[in-house]
Length: 238
Image (cartoon, rainbow, N blue to C red; front, side, top):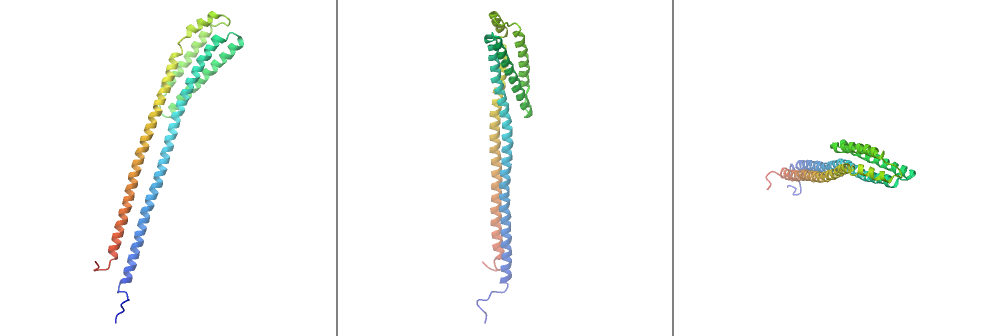
């Protein structure tokens, strides 16, 4: 008499084979999940690296903008100091003080223009406009020095004569520096839009890859489950 609770022949090997297949399934799923996680980490690293490069490049653009703006400020102050030399430099002490401040502002203007030219060249931008402004500034300083030779402390008529000879001479350089500042502001805005577009495109690409990996993992998991269940089914079942 057969034992109704005894396992049919071949049941134990079948269970062992099913267990092996289940472990294989678990291994493949683990690898798929790990691959997805690794891609996520890599995507974060790539995004952080790209953002770092963008911030560094944008920082250099802002440095050029800052240098140009400072050149504007110092040149305007230089022009004002020139007026102080003529109008308030009647006493020797005042003359030396205002003339010293005039030369100090001139040096600061040239220094900021030089800095702007170097920064533009370093990031691959054409610096010829800034270099032209430096040449114009040097020429203007020679004009100031020549005009100042006709100035006499205490002689009111020389004030008007020198002022007339130099009047409007600073205008071309003012326009040049203003144009450089405006162009750099436009470039900064263009780079900002370009960075935003790059970030958006990078996000879309990474999202598409991540979705594809996730779908591949789900499809693989479903296929392995169905395959394992079919192979574990006893012969003649269902």
